[in-house]
Amino acid sequence: MPDPIRTCDVEIRVRYAEVDAMGYVHHARYFVYFEIGRTELLRLNGIRYRDLEARQLYYVVARLECRFKAPARYDDLLTLTTSTERLSPVRVDHSYRLRRGDSLLAEANSTLALVGPDGRPTGLPDDIYAALTGSQATGRDGLATAERVE
Image (cartoon, rainbow, N blue to C red; front, side, top):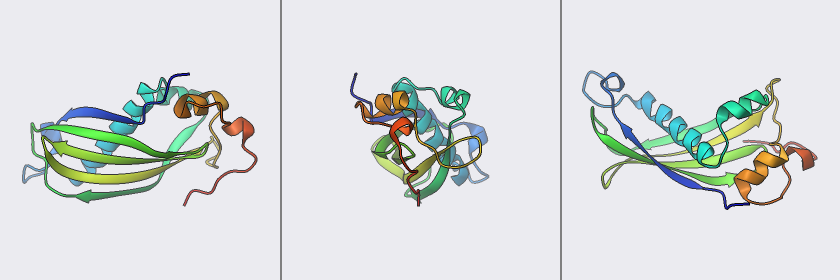
């Protein structure tokens, strides 16, 4: 089994619709960028979010914080670095660094919880957990109790 990819870079070109009246990227757009990073990191590990949904598994944001350092503007080319900091069968923690060239624009952290269609925490199936960890450690199939996500 190949080693999982824990960090990825995604280039984002700021579109006009993403800026406010002052010409800066609206603060809410940063959170959309972070979702792009999470989705692409998952995809690089051979898993599409839509495949999780087909199995009635959903990652929900339990915690998200961002520290804004400098503004981004229309037509800037940004690089978003997304890293998996912690992964368990029921939660994943990510960190994000958004840059324009060498300038750090924002840093963020998130915790996602995995839930089933009833909205209750559940664990990843063994095959997905193994793909994301590179090990044969157990996911939902070997999970005795759900981990609490705070």
